[in-house]
Image (tube, rainbow, N blue to C red; front, top):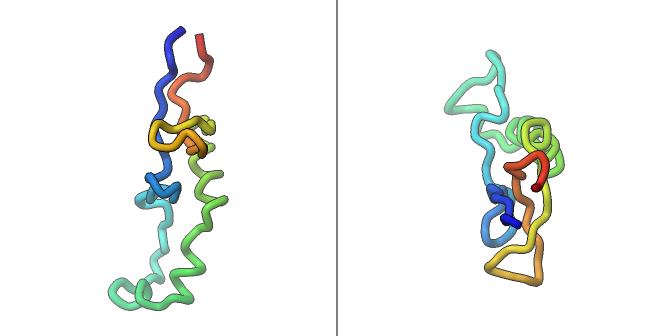
Length: 84
């Protein structure tokens, strides 16, 4: 049996990797001003669960044991719909 391949979606510290261009701030957003306002950034920035839900719209996510730490699980995007 072949081990399925996966793409890690977390770093070695188990932090979710960045998702580039996830949010369109809209035409009212003023660059070089609004991104410095923590209240505006907080409204626009999705939390970890929202990011995982977004990833799951496009990829199958599974927890797998990692080589760097057998005692913890990491979240990976599943490259195969079904395992042989």
